[in-house]
Length: 204
Image (tube, rainbow, N blue to C red; front, side, top):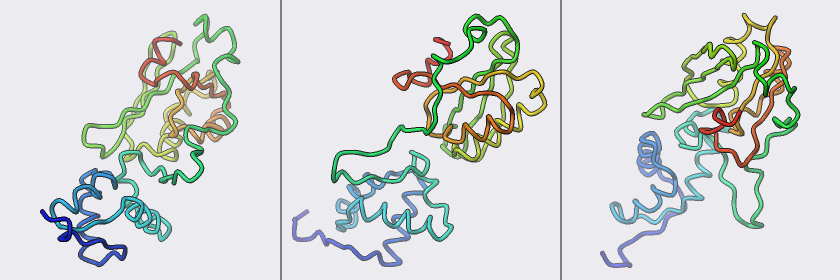
């Protein structure tokens, strides 16, 4: 393929939009699509432009952004090298948990885990009571903060009278932890930011 055959575009035509959206629904990232287009269709389209299309669609009520493997996290330009990734407001770490939680000396302290299914079409919210290992779980359509918060509240509501503490990892799907605390009356505690979610349970 000769370099001059590749056509650079900035305006998305209906045909190009259809092509891009087809790949997004197949769980391709904007970066993958941008790299694939010139090889197969001789079109040079930046991944930034694809992200712009995603968020314009979201602003008008569209759900195309849910196809992103990062579940709707907005693309950040690297103009200053700083982003707000990984920041969850008003986090309370496990260092501040009551000693009873660490000692497993009472029933009513829970842990949350979320797992994306193989096809990335949904997620499983799992809650485990630390002492008895009693487990609750439900499937949600996405690993969004709203879905995880609502599922957690629905699962634990029947046990609210004996609910003490909830321990979670640092996934952005827990940004609505304050809503969970308000609805259930139990404080949410976060594992240390450097702790991968898949080892949180082993450490706590």
